[in-house]
Image (cartoon, rainbow, N blue to C red):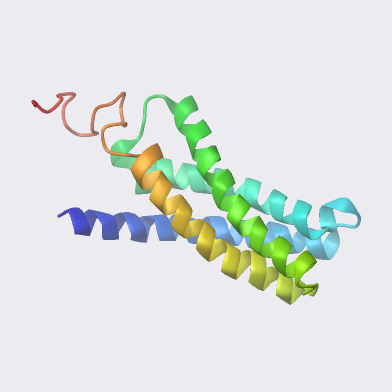
Length: 156
């Protein structure tokens, strides 16, 4: 049962992630290709893509992937979600910075591979683990009660 829940969470998280990923890549590439100046440079473009994708991911994960542990303290949940997303972003951005500025791979293709393949994969693993064990951990939903347990806490 527990492993099937993990697999289901991973599949749903992946589906939400694909939608967020499309938003991220689209914003990144639109800014890189069509926005002159600062917003068209790699780091600001990636930052804008990640911000848009994070909002998509929060909604999808809150209302679908981790709906059984959806929390009543929405503000705190959102802050924790953003903190985890920021850690994932740091990993993602790190791959882009190393590729673009340290290794000197400056083409749009290289930027995409670094940010949207390598960085995205590493950041995804980190985010899934932290969302599952911290932000949406069982027992944190609905004011500390598991969704669907009728408000009862298990006896100890």
